[in-house]
Image (cartoon, rainbow, N blue to C red):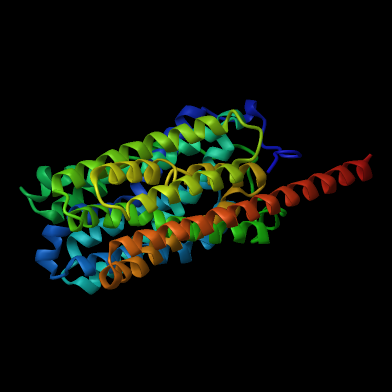
Length: 409
């Protein structure tokens, strides 16, 4: 994939890229916080509302399923009204849903319904952040910015974990949601203002339409995300089932999370030093990540650690790079274009636990990890196909632009 004929706003027109990057990170964290808070407080909430780990898994699957359904409409809203308005709406919606959980969630069905509402905020915040980075951050630094934004998502997990001893075990889990809602609202001033002259253009929808190339990349993202999500969901239980102590399994998961954060930032940093081939690079990362998932099917501490490092470090470090590549190829409509591929990521987050969990229960974890590895390999193959299609689309757009310039002379 090349970046020929790609243009974006002049660097001089961009306002405070560091502030915009920080705003994108805070928006992302605030809008995704409800689902991670549920995970961190699952023990206390499950005892109060009467749901099991299976119920928790179903609620999370519903969350990502609704996020997938809301992704494309959210992208269109960003293109129509701008990232500033949509980001603030996403933050307010996330905060409101967390307050609603604190006050109204007296049963499991109500909790799932409110969590589904917060999933819309997730889609709004993610796509508004993508558009804000495309507007405010110079092209030469966008790779790092997207990597940092995606690496910030685990921060929500840390915040949720910190809420357990500090609030949930003292004042109760409902107050943890109240405090989290207040914290989300404090991020509103960090949302960067809309740049002047950024009204929606007539060609924005057409530029971000669901082309074959974007759909192929989105399907690849579904397969990759379904496999990679299994790491965080099943790693500890899988290791314990193979005879390892829960302490070792937990420390390995922590190691994997740290490697994932570093890899997402590192992949973005390297992307700024490449002129193209970003989607093809994702395919190579997925091949190595698939090898890591395959190692998890083996016994012993060494395969476990190696599998986690490779699986997290390369098999789950690509979302920021994917967003960056799609934005570079669709500068006229970054939110609409990334909404299509982001749908795939959310669909994988929904379908992965629903499909791999029963597989592990019936056939065992080695079979599940092998299946996840095959899914990631298929994702790598589709990424290569998508890379070629995107290259062809970019080349066609370049020729069309040259013809338009010549006709206007």
